[in-house]
Image (tube, one colour):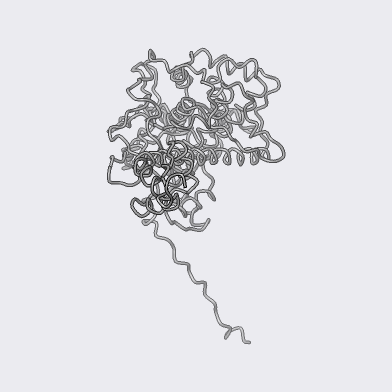
Length: 529
């Protein structure tokens, strides 16, 4: 065929997704990708399942590039940040730089230089860029944010330790209330180790915790949390609706729900950490959904701490080889409540929780006789995991304020860290293959605990409702049993009241009540015949 007459195939341009249509999801992308540092494939799956957003990998990368969303510093990014920090110092401005919405300080860049093998000091870092290089749009001085026409809205709680403190010092128009959560484990004691917990009650003398009326576990059911860090100012609690069937799924609920122990910080010249957002309670049939991550991950340390306080060998369900052993233990109610409060208040990521649980398990195995305060050990494991994964931790006073809330003195934290770091048998290295295996087991255990708790609560409610119906029909069943066979009693009760237990259930109940048929005299034959 002649080359001049050869048909020309033109590439058909795919229909692109409108960027404006995805703008409402920008805050969600920023929270997942920047704050929680979730991988892109996980975000793609989450957005498809939760919001029906289906994009290719190339479209996602293009979108993240346009929005300037990054969750890792490159060497050039660090150089641009340092140049802006020097500019702020020379102009007398506050030395705070926003990198994809997260606050960066000079100490963060200093840690970056120390970790790098090719950088000696700040000058070597600045040599990576020239004076003519334009600063990327996702890196800017926070002091000039309002001057650039950008909305000067309060930032969500970031993951770096220094930025957590800074996020709280902004002038926010509406301050979020501290975390409040309640659960009920009443009626489950036969299924839980009855050994009482040796944990002290939260210190009421501390300014950091304000006890209020009502028990920490006061109504039945599963609470989920849809208030994420990026949604602090938009979080709204659902009002009590007595007509909603979901509220009556686990029985009647008092509309004036009592508050659990509330975290509040003292007014002092030291920087304050931000309170957790207000959780919105939602009844659901999916206890393993994404919004219940706080409750689901709180089960992991709660089970280990409860087993330790009971004097049993903790974590056999975690270390069983080669098959995964089922975790048949539910945590103590007060231990679970404190773990939930701690995780919801700090808003640390799931990866940090998983790594801290691995460290806690190793510590309990190697420090069996030396562990004085299990809560101090747990908080120390969180701090070490946060430092390794995020190159930094919250300010020390944040964790020192957390210890009085669980009934422990603040001095225990320093002793626990020394104990962990000086233990020769304790390793903080987790190989990639070991990490995959352990995290899968942790997810399996936490999911099974939540499902088992929901099943036990449902069974407890159903059994109590059935018991009340037995007592309600007790007199009528006794009268019918005097004149009818047991099969007829079952049929009549089903027709009259839609009450249809099994015949075996009727036999057991009649035996417990002591009902007996009356002795009747036959009229067919006379006496003595």
